[in-house]
Image 1 (spheres, rainbow over the protein chains, first blue to last red):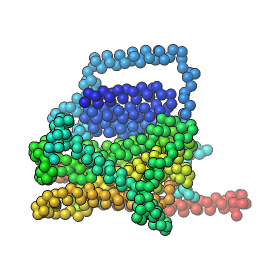
Image 2 (image 1 turned 120 degrees about the vertical axis):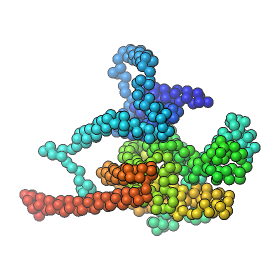
Image 3 (image 1 turned 90 degrees about the horizontal axis):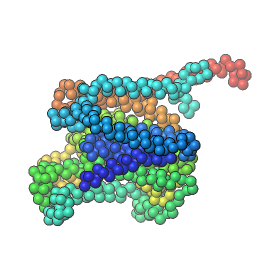
Amino acid sequence: MFLLIYSTLFALTVVFALGVLVFRNTVKSAISLVFTMLCIAANYLLMRQEFVAFIQVIVYAGAIMVVFLFVIMLLNLREPESPAWYLRGMRYWGGALAFLFFFVLAWGIQVFSVADLTPGAAALEELRRESGQAEVTQLATLMVTRYIVPFLLTSVLLLVAVIGAIVMARRKDEDGRDITFDEDEEGA
Amino acid sequence: MQPLFDFLGQFTGGAGNAFVITAAILKIALFLGGVLTAVPFIIVFERKILSWIQDRPGPNRVGPFGLLQGFMDGLKLFLKEEIMPKGVDKTLFLLAPTLVVIPAFLALCIVPFGPIIQGEHLDALGSFLGLDPAMVGSGGEISQVALAVTNPNIGILYLLAITSVGVYGITLAGWSSNNKWSLLGGIRASAQMISYEITLSLAVIGVVLLAGSLNLYDIIEGQRGGFWHWNVVAQPVAILLFIVAMFAETNRLPFDLAEAESELTGGFHTEYSSMRFALFFMSEYVSMIVISAACATLFLGGFFGPIPLPWETLMEQFGLVAILAFYIVGPLVILPAKVSFFLFLFIFARGALPRLRYDQLMTLGWKYMLPIGIINLVVTACGVAIDMAITRDGEVAWVTKVSIGAVTLVLFLGWELLIFSRRRRSQLSREYRNLYRKESSSDPALAS
């Protein structure tokens, strides 16, 4: 029964991921990506990582992809990309490269075991054995103790991105001064 | 009842499994059935209340007081012809209503509509139903039955995740319809729902901090013992933010820019007819019910009544009847009453408030509600941290809750006063500026 659920889910994940590449229509590609994200979240659920699963849905499917879709719809890319810029034989070269990448990836995973690559998961497992705490508590504890520096650096990075977006979106008048949008002008 | 489960257990690998499956199906059927039956009545009440606000009779022909109007409207939609306009993107056009309905119903399944049955109560109810105490009972295989379809540990995150996915249906409906008004509606919906989701989450995080858990039952348990323990006392600003954001998330007036009949002829669902339109319509009401229930659970004590009754003594006196009553009053009286209050609020706001303009919507969301939410969160976090440092018992004391509530409320009112006084001042200064410009202008037409 579980094998059936697992394999169906994995198959669905791969099918939607392929859909992102295969669909010529940009909106359909984006929707496939959304479903891929949801399938990955379901995979996390099967691994009993509820918190990570729903954060995945909120952040990727719920926020990032909506912005993607928003931009796609604003640009209104209705016509499929014309195949004119395609190089001759690109399909075959691309396919070959993809297979090569797949084998390199598989080789890499085999050489370095997954536990080495993800010290966070190992640390989490260690904590779980030591205490019977809830998943969220464990994650939070790890995040503000062992990984406090990367955590704070990430927040600084996000802050920089936000300030950068504001600076770029700022409007200026002819003299180069900032135009501040005054709420009092509404309805005036 | 036990022989029935023994019989079913032959097919499901044990009588316990059979009981769990039967209970789950029963809960889903009763809850889903209840909500779906309520929807047509809510629509009738909406039209009745609107007509009362607008001083006209409203629907009064079908059934007593027009009560069956909603059912007949549903029947009418069933029988209407499906129309698919030329040039639509067929796959997405058909997919969109499903993508709206599924999240709305998925969100229903974490609403806790009654307490968890466990301990002596489960023993008593189990023997009443003739169940084997080794299977269902405090010492048995199944030691607790929650009166919610599911009870995940990260309950509130599930709700936020599902509501954030709900936007795709509306956006895609707008895009695939091949209609400029629909597209505008879809784009508006996606921008609006993303903006207000942030405020919604910020309002929720304060409650999560107070409860110390994401589980909805833990959050309700922290509000046990009368209305002065409800989270609304500790988070008066958060509930205001939540209510405003909840109007925006369900695309209801004054935030129904995605539909906006007067400018977009129906917005994202303009091109939909018959049952597909009915799906949009129904899921709007279902998500209203879900988010109202969520607000009641987070801020108004969920299935707990405002005044705690002496259930312990009642149960000693009346036994099984009192136990049954205890588990029936919550889901059938108290939670529906709270949900009805919020539904009335939804409908009343529709009758009383005009629709916001798009830039006003964005200004309200990003410049007012987001900062207020962040300040509220910081104050709450400080309060909880101080409480934890003093008592170290893992629970937030009532005094702390009240002080957090008082501080956030004072800060909120102060902020509002500041904004109003600044607005008044800048209005005055602009009038003076205009006066000065007019006087100094060399243009005779302006100078006069």
